[in-house]
Length: 265
Ligand SMILES: NC(=O)c1ccc[n+]([C@@H]2O[C@H](COP(=O)([O-])OP(=O)(O)OC[C@H]3O[C@@H](n4cnc5c(N)ncnc54)[C@H](OP(=O)(O)O)[C@@H]3O)[C@@H](O)[C@H]2O)c1
Image (cartoon, rainbow, N blue to C red; front, side):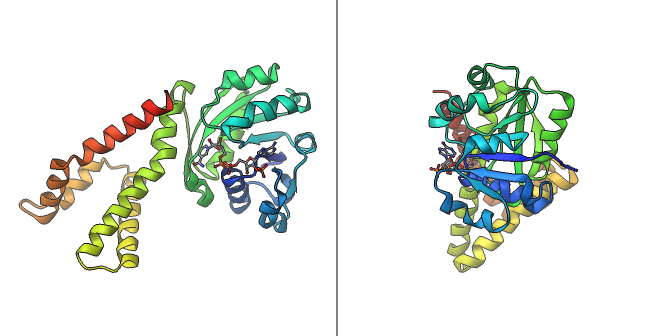
């Protein structure tokens, strides 16, 4: 059972989703969570649920052991540098979900042997279905297990080396947009062949969910499941091959490559 108090600095989209997920999962009770931002009116829902909402980062850090940093990359260094003296390496664990900010950048700011984690979740964290890739420096096994357990409440967690963080960002976080564009395109196709938009979207979304679950729950290879639905001379293989002639797999692979190039430029 989690007994630690958790502060989320930067209560925007991701920060709020993490707070909601921790509450819903029961990992933390409302009185164990503090969330900060400057525009407090946007945190009204969480306040109603009993979460402490404040613009006072120093006080929030003082009253917690686990500090989740969900600020934007452009101001994270400045904000954390201003809070540097509030952190105690013997008390605090820092978890940054900020894209593109390395462990060494964070360590430089704190200039102390404080345990630091980098986590890369995706927006499905709002419904506890994220994949969160994690790396760390300076943490004990207990702290590593704790942080893994925290993100396991919000989906699944995969420990990775930091050098793979950009790849995790593209495949996991940008991946939400790639998968949703597939669903939108399938919906448009569904309308063309007779369904209204709402029904087509529901069929497309549930089909993608079912396909993913076949891999996740039954541990199958995608091609094994594809073979089951591609009858010789049937309509599935004809459609699939036409998609491939039009560059379906290739465009996905190239898109992932382009995102990766961009993140590194
Ligand atoms: N969205 C994703 O899919 C995703 C996935 C993985 C990682 N990330 C990373 O997560 C981070 C947050 O993303 P987001 O989409 O949640 O951004 P966001 O909605 O802009 O949230 C950032 C929040 O920080 C608050 N803030 C700014 N200055 C502050 C300060 N001095 N003290 C406390 N709070 C402050 C802002 O609120 P006020 O202006 O009211 O202070 C804002 O709500 C980003 O670094 C992003 O790269 C996002």
